[in-house]
Length: 146
Image 1 (cartoon, one colour):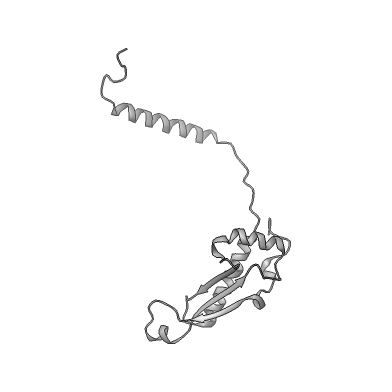
Image 2 (image 1 turned 120 degrees about the horizontal axis):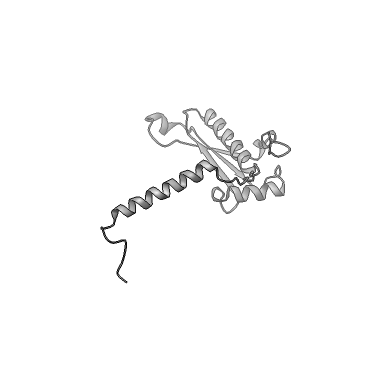
């Protein structure tokens, strides 16, 4: 687990801070879809969380900026299966995965120099394009009258 935080976010139990709501799923499925509330909606408030540190809240706010509403709520849903329980489990897994990925520190890119082969390939391609453009010109256009 190179490059990760000292304790994993998955070790923290967020269930007490998660709010769940169930609704009817959309899409095809006949009568079943219209009768049963199988879609699971998870709601988590980043700003009010007592399990996250101030730094983690700031990181999450910037990483999940577009997914948060003005009050700091993160809302996710799952309607993959016909089972409410399975959808709830799936949305919880996606929530933990999202937090884990958002809190991963970005690895710094180590700049490398171009290889000799890539330099040769680039020059070859440039020459090919120059020749192609040269062939497009009308004959006698290479020297203009002075």
